[in-house]
Length: 178
Image 1 (tube, rainbow, N blue to C red):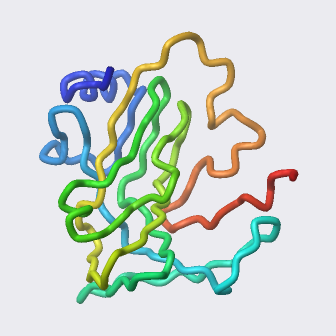
Image 2 (image 1 turned 180 degrees about the horizontal axis):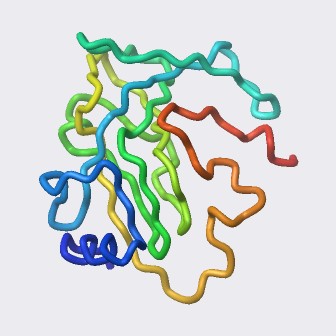
Image 3 (image 1 turned 135 degrees about the vertical axis):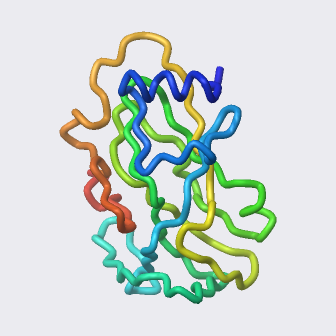
C-alpha cells in the first residue's frame, strides 16, 4: 500500500515525514516531486575500487545548466532534505526525466525507516542532456511498515549515509568488511 496525498500530509503533521523545503504544488496524488540540487560530483579516478575510498570532486551547476555525458557516473543530490520516521521511502525517477534518457539511480531507490538527509542520486544518461538546478528529477513514495522496527536507520551505529548533506556523497562500500 502506498500513502495517498492526504496521508502524506497527515504524516507530515504528525512529524513522521519531513520534506524541506515543502511545496504543496509538488505533492501528487500518491507521491512528492523532488528536484535536482545545485551540486553534482564525479569520481576523481576513472577506475574505482570497492575496497578503497574513491574520492569525488563537487561542482556547482551553473545558471546555464550543465551538460551530462554518456558513460560518466554523476552523483547529484535532491534539493529537498527529508526525514522518514515511520514509513519506507522510495525514490523513483519522474517519467519526464526518463523520457530525456536520464536515470537518477542505479540501484539505491529505497530508503530505510529513519533515513534523514538529502538523497544522493546516481545519475547516468543515454545521450548528452543539459540539466538545471531545481528541475524536477524524481518522486518520493511512502510505504507503511508492518511490525515493530527494532532500530531505525538514524540510530544504527553502522549507518553510512545517515544525515547526508546538500552535496552528493560518494560510495562508502569501503567501510564494509569483505
